[in-house]
Length: 147
Ligand code: FAD
Image 1 (cartoon, protein in one colour):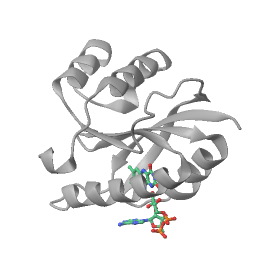
Image 2 (image 1 turned 90 degrees about the vertical axis):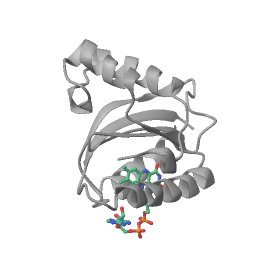
Image 3 (image 1 turned 60 degrees about the vertical axis):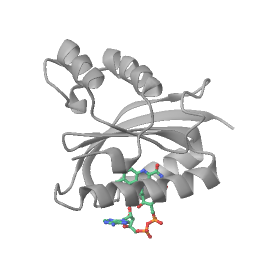
Image 4 (image 1 turned 30 degrees about the vertical axis):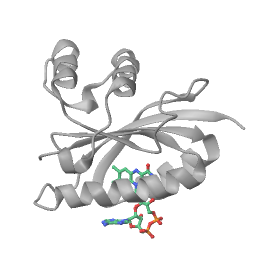
């Protein structure tokens, strides 16, 4: 069955002291469901924005995105920036890798979009470049992340 890659951006609904625990909960839910359903990917967080790349069976990814993730009140303004049939899995080792904002990503945004990190600015051209960077990012544990 057809495999797809989807990348969307969203904004966190509330930035408060519960951010780290929220991220832990989201990742726990993601890893559990994704592992059981052959979904892989990365969840990137920085400056109040989420960027998530999901790879897997088309029906499962569509159902996960439209029936669970979009309806989740922990974030708002989900916008798909990339959706395509997928031949090569970039995130096959990760049921959901977590990556926080870092210098490399900030430099990428400054170079192409003249702003430190605003994923809504990604274009058709820069989205694919950004996905390649995400694939090379090391994995972090949320506990290493300081908001
Ligand atoms: P239930 O747990 O039955 O909840 C019902 C509804 O409430 C759902 O719409 C759910 O989205 C929402 N919800 C659940 N918990 C909360 C909460 N604490 N606060 C507000 N609303 C809540 N899930 C995955 O399986 N894989 C992923 O890769 C994945 N990535 C995510 C990325 C982001 C940025 C976010 C915010 C969530 C992500 N989730 C992911 C979680 C997903 O949105 C669902 O919460 C989860 O799959 C449970 O879905 P459910 O239908 O069983 O919801």
